Image 1: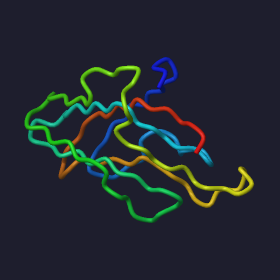
Image 2: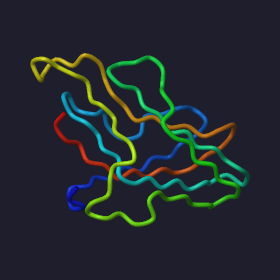
Image 3: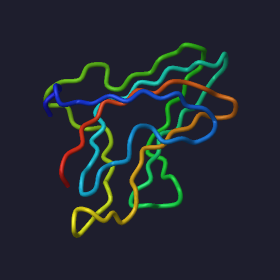
Length: 128
């Protein structure tokens, strides 16, 4: 992994599940190398990271981050090295002609209850 190729996306998240970033392109994989969550509510907060692959209707949970107090920040990993392995892999939609998608693949996120926060992902999209 070449760190200079990493893209970042930051999104505000609430209890309403929302898409984080863009749709994963056809015949690609999104490799997520680093994640940072900041709790903005004055209470405990549970952030759920999920994925929807190939147009699936339901979101599959891939990780959860628990914070206890307002402004608590959780980062994984603390340091990103050139030989770091991805934390998560999201498969893009398969397409036999590389144009017509089978469905969309998305990264999704939500907080528990009345929770709010900010999520930042460092990722690379590469051919499948």
